[in-house]
Length: 606
Image (cartoon, rainbow, N blue to C red):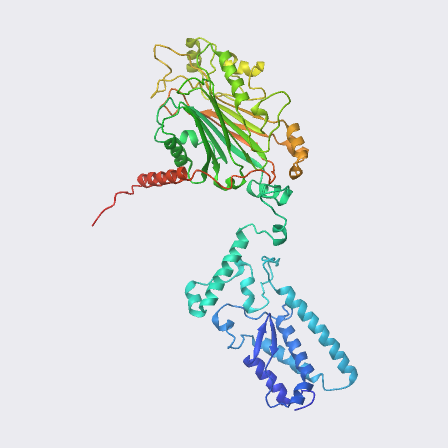
């Protein structure tokens, strides 16, 4: 053999070795010749090392350079992935590679020192260029979706690295193909790789560097916290939550078979994020009522909390994925008739936080009768002073010298049978109802609200300081003959009135901004965002005339609430909800759907 490795025998062997793929290992798109002619002497083997390495570099660059030659066929079929079979390379590419080998071996025949030094320099450059190509073409979990121009075909660094390409670009294979052409370990690894890549595309991956900075139980870690701005915008992109508030005096009767018109009105497009439903003179079976609500709302929501006092009941349902961002719920109650065994008048309140915004829901049943306005105002003041909320939530903003539970929360909803009446004769009110086209136009004034007792209390400031009510466009909700749409025809001849109401209150923008400045985790809440977006806004306010089981009509409203980031010192509910109510409600919902489709639930024995 020639010293310089340019003998015909050596060249022929290299060419045959490449064409047959014998003794070649594929490593990230590079070919390393591990087979040496056994007939060559050890001295020739040592002398020809540089020449063979140079040929290998040229060969590798010819294969991996995607700009100068077509890519190797990277199909995941067994014939191309097998290491015992030759690579499927086009003929023109083989000729190009063979010419590159010939040119390399012939270029070393001069043997002078100047040519040898130049060749060493070229080898170093080729190695560095090869290393850059290999490293830049590798895929990793940190860069699952590379930026590739639409016009250029996707190329991988090696046939075996196609698993690390984006999932959308991978060739889909059936389980039958995998079982035929892969061993058991390959099957499991391929399945795990696919699942990991799919999870990477869908889930919100957390880098380990950020995971070291996270603490979901203690500390003020701003955007990296579970309740921070990043998580808030991922769950609620507009930083807004839709809240449904409903109230109904059930008159001690069981609810109708369907309450969709009350809980899921047809005029709203989507189920709100939070549903708060308060009842007065509720049915005796509290669990049955909660299951009825869960069955109606469906599996997308869970009952976060509920509380009751005598015949008063309040339930809070939350969108299922939001329970991880809710604090623990705290409840309190107060009866305005402490001496009675059967408590029908008073209030029940539930408080909790969603991210950094605190909410208080209070359902109340105040003193009845037309003339007892002062008693009702006294009831309101006593309830406000007696409800001890919050207990452990870090949201207390007390005013000096005053005890007002409604001042401690960002958003407060007060709803129920407040029993305020219209100061007009019955005949005049009935005539006005008959002559009015319902619902009232929003731009026209209400014909009877100027005599409404609650409106007078709100304007005078005797009670409910800071509370508002949306415009009423529906007819009076009290008092009807049960089972009909007819107003009271009994001997008492009660005057129709708006006894069932929903009031709301939010802390001022100035208070919200000062709270944001006090907490480092809330620093992302700017003054412009507070001033431009109202913290609480009523979108719809209506009644449900179709439900006739009670002498009252249900009243409901949908609100839009601005939600701000929170801090991790808030005691979280850790995803807790009433599982028994959820399972029973979904079970009954499934049974009712099967019944509606005509599917029999009776087992047949053959």
